[in-house]
Length: 454
Image: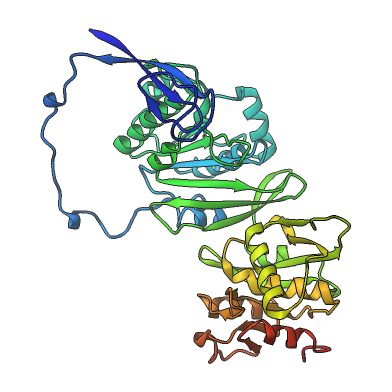
């Protein structure tokens, strides 16, 4: 016999309460507490379960059996391929290309594996038209449109290799009496699909909606439940898309893949440094190339700065692709240690190509661009920089220095401005000119030179 018990949860953070409250005690939001009626079996008891079976740590194999999709950038982000029984959550803005990417992946895998695509948002005709545009109309992908997770799992065979759910926020289960998309429904449906993946060895891809802040909608526990969390990023006016791994139990985090959105679908970009360094014919003040590391690959991007006279009481600080708080820190250090003031100037900073820099090694390139834009000095096109700036004005060492230098040399750069404390780079045997700097004063001295020798 079943009985119903009432609980209350926050629709923003998923916190559970035993009574209604006007304000959530966890996230502080008002009027987000809603009622949930849960149906539970009164006869179920944990004592009825059988004993657990324990195994040794040495029982598992050292090598993980991964399956490749032949889409190089997608396999790279997942750590070298897809692991059977894993659950991958992909989030991104509407229209960014999540469904297109997964349909391309399934079409490539369907030649050798059993693949199923379940859509809860689009009709079968819409998906077939997309497949026609992508040239995947003749693939062996099985398609269905359904939102009942119980019916979906019941209809799936145990020999399914890959399953795509588009999207997890549209599913519902009869075990929970609430509308689809609520915290409880998302959690219950995700648990059912994860249990299916682990018991059958099926690789499951879950498409997730995002909030206006860019986070995946639903409870935060959803990201803890899955094995891998990917974010699909990109500007609508830019053809390039970035697939970034923020969690991966089977590979490195912060790995990224670059795609070019075209009429025939998403095309892997094997050398993204060339993409982010286009249209650099003439050197102008305020531009510097940064040699960064994202995941396991080095990437060169252009840092652009514009410093203009301010007509406001509080000068503007606008940043695209970088942390604005980091900009405030770099400006404060420059003003304090170098006596160069930006207090009467508007500062605009942008990472070209829609790329986002997250590592502190970009401080030196940013400072170089700001000083170049402020004083009108030009940084030659053959020069790139990397290094972290401390609060005392020193240039601190960064990791994986040799890989950054090799990537710059491969693209034709001849001068590298880098921290003097990076001992691993001092014995580099390439044809580059390494310019070590210890503090911001050394950087200003280099910048005020008429030209760095070619």
